[in-house]
Image (cartoon, helix red, strand yellow):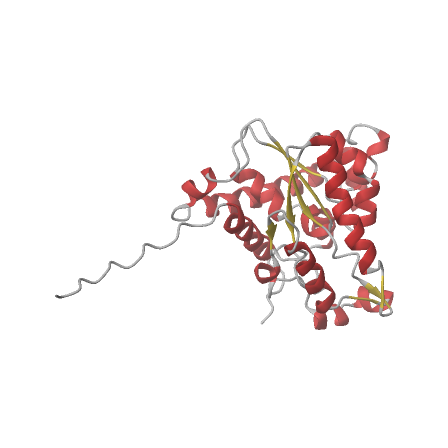
Length: 280
């Protein structure tokens, strides 16, 4: 069973979730004011800010719910991110989403841990590699990287980027970043897709876009074979996609946060059963 969207279906709010022009136009200098960005979404500055604040409030609520779970305090304290460190996310729409796993995670970390989300909707691994100077200029202590879902999209059945290029670009992005900054690296596999929903979604159908689960699984297995920690998000995202079959619902994003916690600060193992006395 696939869960449909549990967020506001308003088109403007959906665009706000996934589109952030200020990330694409960084070369123009400081982030434009709300009054400049709001009209791009058909909103005035006040409504734009109200909607952004609402999305951020949802992230805080999601983080608070996770923090209230039994044993959460000890697990959060066991995360490797320390006060004073800079944690940077690199990715595409799953991470760029204003309700993404990373936007929730930032509220679970101590305030002194700085978090920067560099993910850009639609990004491929090659584009991320081309943006290496922006990444390394952040001087990250940690990089959480979820890329590759856009590489394996198919245009009339033809992969956008060959698997060999993806497998070259991802390690190159890691190696160059670590070499320049000394950052520690964590991979996240792309979540899966609902192939049938993707095929029915009008925008994808008109554009001839599609995804194959086998392509995403092959990419996940490649990442799981890398020496760094890899968070496998496929189970977390399964059944929690939006109407388009590709993007996660907010519930799916919350499940990805849980997968990150399970990988980086796993819950304690249950106590071993008491040994049975052996009669002599």
